[in-house]
Length: 218
Image (cartoon, rainbow, N blue to C red; front, side):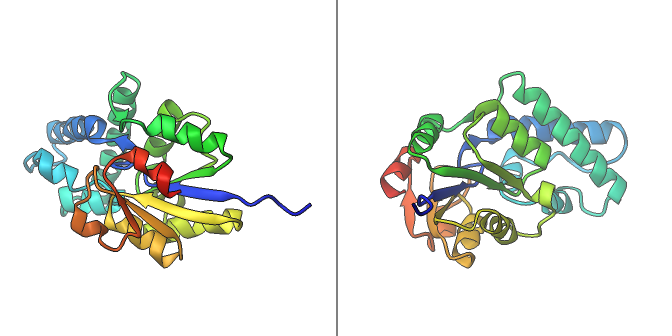
């Protein structure tokens, strides 16, 4: 018998599966306050709106915008503190998936879909959230921090190179997610309930305003 056909769905994490603002915004504040207290960052604490605009970017991009002109050592401290406070708050029960996410993912797994995460976040954060909220649901969890990729296009390509079979779908809430899907030849689903704006998602093949709608498209 031939190999059974596999359908793979690659999900972005923040703003797609996980309401990361409920975790990351407080952790950003913790990090920036600590850097200030240690004399490593003399600037102001960015507004929550500015911090939310960082979601979907790589750590290098985030700190280049939030901590312009600081040394590599300060950026390394910022990474260390941010991960510490994110994990601390995660295990306190802060942060949560979007409504219906866990149920839909379980539905896909019961139907033998292969589920993957491709995130621009830090590897410790991405795997921490995946294990805490979605244990056993994802076959592969890839992050820009873990694989040192410069774009989500390259990160998604690594997943395709790993599995090489079946049909793929890319699901995300930012333009980088749609670009990653399109440049790798995948069907794309844009999520218009997270952090991305609708104009970022105009090139998506489908647009959803509720995660549960993905079941009808995949």
